[in-house]
Amino acid sequence: MSDDDPISDFTRRSMAVEGVAKTVYVAGAGPAVVVLPEMPGISPDVLRLARWVRDAGFTVHVPSLFGTDGAFPTVDGGREVVRRACVSAEFRAFAGGGTSPVTLWLRGLARQAHAMCGGPGVGAIGLCFTGNFALTMALEPAVIAPVVNHPSLPLDDPAGLELDPADARAVRDRLARDGLTVLAYRFEGDRWCTGQRFAAYRALLGDAFDGRVLPDGAAHPAPPPFFAEVVGTPHSVVTAHLVDEDGHPTVRARDEILAFLTDRLRPREDGVRRP
Image (cartoon, rainbow, N blue to C red):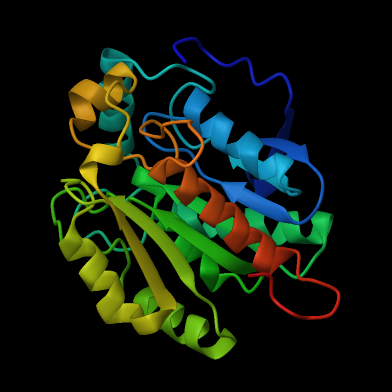
């Protein structure tokens, strides 16, 4: 896909949390899942993922956090979005910055989405720059199905986690208390989300962290220009580097994510988890 996405099959809403309003694209029915954008924004590939989540039986919420909504990821445009995000007060892109303040807003969005959609809780899918945000959102009790895809922050510390120490402890304790699992993905040779980072998640969360690694050869060989020239490494497992072919490893990863969400957000009436 090389064109902009008009996002015409989503409802565009202005949603406010503690007086701060942001645009959120909403579609579907069923329990809520928040699909976060990846750099450089709500791209056609991110929307493709959101539609798959919608079609699996969920009300998908895609918040606009940076970039131009629906835009195809170009090199120049993407670089400018990254530059602005790295100096924004809402994000903590570098080591030592702690938890990004925007996660407070996202926790409020999850709370509102749960109130509107019902069900046992809310899912959250983070991607790239927002990868770890899905984990931090688990500080909101409504979030019960966090998915952390190729988390790239902090950009300057391959073994770092985008969490301040107090939030790290709180997330660990919440997962242990409620028996939650974090599902996570990366490519083996990803230089933005390294094996060191996954090891740090494992050290913090123990068996609650289900980190899965795909071989670099499974990545789409011709992603959009921003990913080919700026990211420059296999990175976006279920978006820009997904190969939409039956049985492909990236499609299996997508299906595992949908099954994870279904298991936790749409439990069987007999109480038995789906396989």
